[in-house]
Image 1 (cartoon, rainbow, N blue to C red):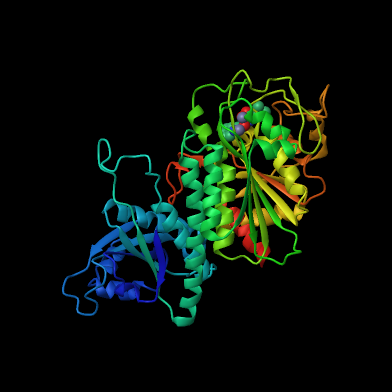
Image 2: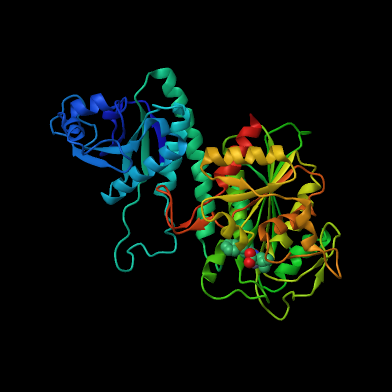
Length: 506
Ligand code: BES
Ligand code: ZN
Ligand code: ZN
């Protein structure tokens, strides 16, 4: 996707469609006056008639009268698209608005379009620029690589490939907008990488595939990469990751990506993502209905890859390490069994009560490695528990951690990115649910408070590091998309992680 700031006035944009936000209330927006004049007052008439009050989702598509001498190159069509109450015009509203504008262009099979950026409320123009870029680039993305070009029953619609973003303000402000658009397009590109990996099915996106993507990414954007296979995992005593992988013919991988943006001695920020490329539960087999969605069990790992790409592309002045333990969880004669006691990199022994609680096992070894890097802070994200979907549904991730300040930072990054998270208590009283008769701890703590006991399990492997865990089981993918997403892979929490890194970088 070619997404860029364009210093030309909106009505001089070079594309066949220009989308203009129309706000409710007395002032419809900065661009309104010029647009209304150019369209012979038609928008004003529609507004007076009550057709265009600026309410969200209201729209009016007007063809420009031909023979316009002022700007013969300008847009053929102007889309006046409701943007709602200007007081509520924040980054998430702007993302949704840009997403709706892209859908209109798609419906008209226009590959290119222009957007007008306005900031009538509290949100700055650079933030709006960032959000418009994110909304447009995320909305335009679709997973097509496994379809034939002609399609089966109908040819696929033309996707939007180019979006220019225009200001209605003077030069100094335009530069800030330009910077916002640059950041937003890098964030969206990282998130779209995560979505592509999520959408790839289990027979394509194997642990070796994720490792290959990580290596290619490292070459492309300038990251350091290390890939560990069974030999290195044995050497490092990552027995928990090996135990999960032993039921599959696919070899596990441990992916290490490094962005060296800070000083050599600066403690790194460590991101860890669950890269379980297919989870059928193992011997504690899952029921068949909806099992195909377990290709998404690598969403945390995908988000970490996306966030590492963003860190490199933004040249963040911090050291960041991304860790992805990657494996399949399947059934075979070699698979781990309920009742098995396994070792871990940290030395703790684990009684496997349920082989479907495998995410925490592979994360345990990754977190223990992350801890050995003496990080400034460590954040993991994982599609870890069905209990989280019950607790918080499909709109909100759970966050739990050892550092209240870090949890607060992640909540703020969630609010800013629209990838919101909410804290659950990691109180000591829940920990005893993991007590085992025959090992140091069990891998499940029963049905009550399943998300909390899963986080307690992880906590056993982080020591005294400032650490937080995001349970993204309910939010990483789904079928009730926001206006700027489609059914399927959402890429969450790539931008949450990126916003957190940006905030830490100052
Ligand atoms: N990958 C699943 C969690 C999951 C569930 C993700 C629904 C997305 C949607 C995880 O490995 C799992 O199976 N967890 C079990 C844990 C239980 C056995 C303690 C669960 O939540 O049922
Ligand atoms: Zn599982
Ligand atoms: Zn899983």
